[in-house]
Image (cartoon, rainbow, N blue to C red):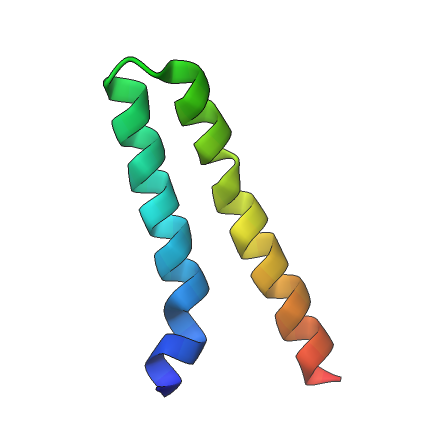
Length: 55
């Protein structure tokens, strides 16, 4: 359980990145860019939650 608690945001960001690349190369470029924006959002949200939980 410790593995999933630590790495699930990174795994979600990576899956989002792969989905974005798949959309881009399948011709859905606008949708690919939109999904690509999820990656920094997921990682940023994870960073904020981690900082809040440390205090």
